[in-house]
Length: 217
Image (cartoon, rainbow, N blue to C red; front, top):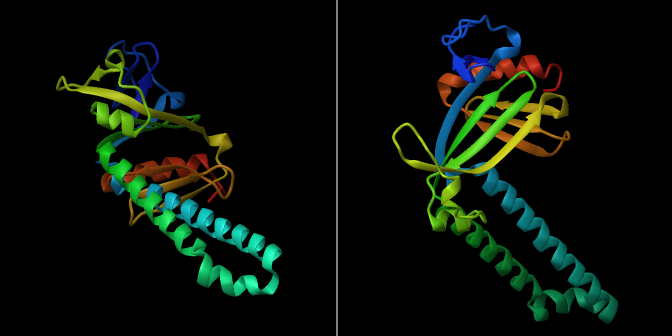
């Protein structure tokens, strides 16, 4: 949703003037905001990143152990390593177990509500959760009741994560309209931030990002 932010009253307005103080709000006040709520386990990007990291680790472990076996036993290592040592099987089992443990952790994190804001300088992403001790521990954050905030319905929420990416630091972006996703990279090949958008918000946010990141697609 396109809004106009008044720094004096610290409020968002639907029109380019403040409903509270009446001042005119120009281009520097323009923001695009939306909210997305989903289960942490349904984040396919996060799962894919973890799976790739685990697969690379397993391959590297097997390769290093194979090299060591070759140094010790010579050419016969290629036969004995895969038939007798059990290292490849153990490495694969370790990888599968680690992936299941990560999925369990994401499952325990439950549902998260993410607020996004595109402003003239960059992208702000805040992740909120309905705090329980189990949700906090699974995210490795402190269960601190003093940090709880209440929403409009009086329910407690906790800011679990916050990140900000400057437009000038963004190397490129990748739109995925069918998936309702926009991926921001920093540097060129590293996924720094993933934006999930409802269908009705996608085009407006995409127009603003394209205007800020010209020739970076």
